[in-house]
Length: 259
Picture 1 (cartoon, helix red, strand yellow):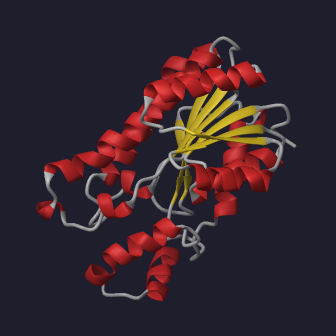
Picture 2: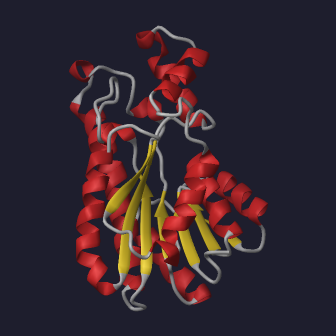
């Protein structure tokens, strides 16, 4: 197991990606502290993992709540080795309209949410990690942060902002022993979020769910969509000491889309 005795905090652990990553980190030996805005989905993931997991309600945009939870983790487990921000948003709040029909508040919402949450959770964890001279800070990005995509509002710019922050944080924190990384998957039909995105875009695209999945698959070199287990295994490796030479970058998990 590549994460034996590591202590990980996962934000957005009740979601499909966050939950998959939480399960994989625990399977690789980490003690995982799972958080989310709603208790039920986070507690369900923790129950599936077992004694290696603890669940808590934490709003990843509430700085005092983030810091209080991290203090509790350190008091309980002694340190924080891994911080993983996998928060998401209800897609109907941000997607589905052409930019010319999107008002400023709707456009700004993902910009005010994704990068800010990553900043708050990363900074909070880093302040504990620097005392130990080691740690891995990770988040999830998305292909619209790199290439144009229709009906996405401010989602693409928000992901691009996170990728820029990964580079900036790494530059500052690497001399103190910390690594900062992102994962950029694309098109995960297993997730409820991808089905919600399809529902919002179906009329404009004029295709059904099966055709939408084919559209996602054909955007990759092997003509299939990335799987959640593949994302989770990559996350576990990047969080491990085996990836000690990797920092300041977003790992492309789109299977062939431009980096």
